[in-house]
Amino acid sequence: MNVASFDPILIGSVILMQIGARHLELDLTPFQKQLLKNKIIQAIILFGIVYIPVRDLKKTLLILILIYLIIYVFFNENHNYNLFSKKFLFTNGIINNYEDIKKKYYMNLSKII
Figure 1 (cartoon, one colour):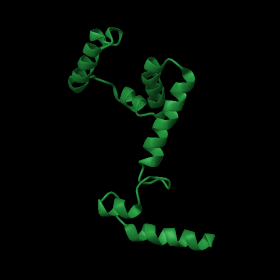
Figure 2 (tube, rainbow, N blue to C red; figure 1 turned 30 degrees about the vertical axis):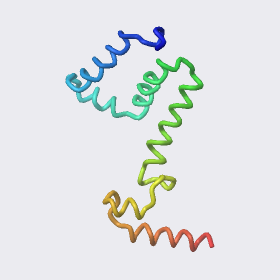
Figure 3 (tube, one colour; figure 1 turned 180 degrees about the vertical axis):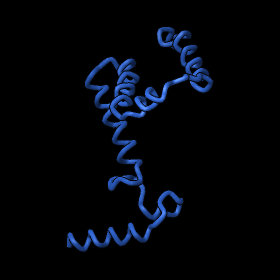
């Protein structure tokens, strides 16, 4: 075991953050809550969270792009490029009307052909 990689203060702070995040109550004003729901503010906060351990602007931006692709494209059931089939989403109750999606698909396919 490499002694330099074992940092008890870092491990302790991670444990405290996990425990504290569940039980910490912040009394935010309605404006502050609305501000935190803004996509730009969320991106800035996420940038800060990712930048601290990475310490490289290019790598941080690449990680942010990957995170947003995963969240808003690949695992978004409403996006055309999601990783799950419409049939799978319908059978698991995530989307409601599989036939409408199927008709729209065939109409778009017939326009292409």
